[in-house]
Length: 79
Image 1 (spheres, rainbow, N blue to C red):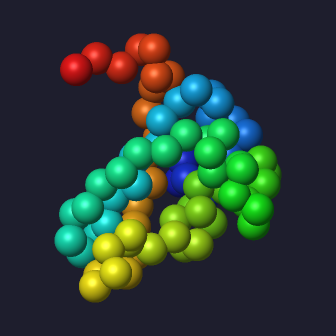
Image 2: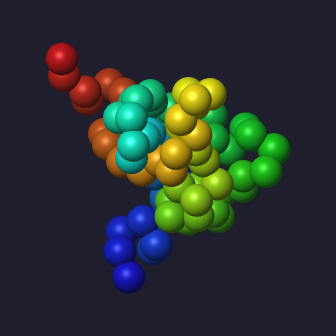
C-alpha cells in the first residue's frame, strides 16, 4: 500500500493544494480538496489513487493519465 491508496480526500486539509500532472506531456495544474469534493461524482471518502484513475490530461490532444501530488496548506506555500 502507498500513501495514495491509504489517503481519502477528507484527510487532506481543505485549504491544501493538490498538483495534477500529466504523465505524458507534463501539463500541470493545481486544485484543492474542497474543489474536488464539489465535483458531483467525487465524495470525501474517495482515495487519491482512485482520483488519479478518474482524471486525464486537460489537453484535448493528449488525454493521458495524470498523477496527483498533495502538498501544504495555501498559507504555508512559499514562492
